[in-house]
Length: 245
Ligand SMILES: [Zn+2]
Ligand SMILES: [Zn+2]
Image: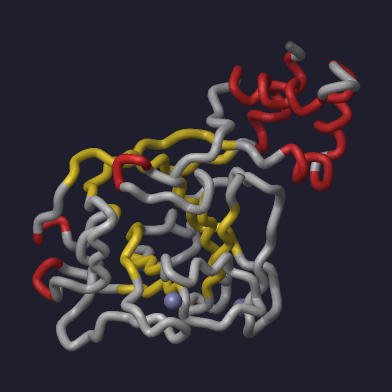
């Protein structure tokens, strides 16, 4: 394997948090933690969100804290993700709004927790631990944004540069398969997707990827993934993309 390719990849790899479901169950003390299913973090007097299309209550799927922005003065808020498994939105801009939802809480605390929002009996609540790992962009993004790296991969194997890239990524310790992660680069199943902010029209930033998780009974289509985005400027504007095999 070429040393210069490994060095080039080390320069663009990013740190992210891998989310690992740890223990089934829910307790109120865990209300504000990064976790799957059970009752969502919600506050007193807040109504459980309802899907505007089918009228059913939205299911709480996952909540997390995005990676802190180095320039931001305040800590990132708790983001709570709800989804309608009856309507199964995939997040296109033409879709009716409200079939999925991200709610932000800047001062979440177990003392303000209102139990019972978004509970979906088909999902198993799970506490999680997180660990720092490294990820790389998809090969598609490499061809587009780092043509010199793509050229190195083609130089090693013109027939199969993607395998060269993936092997080099593994060699420098990056995770190359989709997994539930916060921050870093998205690992696409069907290829790169972008979401633009409805307010400023600029591309939104990738903040989190929620993989299908067997232990949680969470399945996006056929072992798919959900990708979440946020506008860098308009923090209340979010995007979603669901991809599956
Ligand atoms: Zn619905
Ligand atoms: Zn914006």
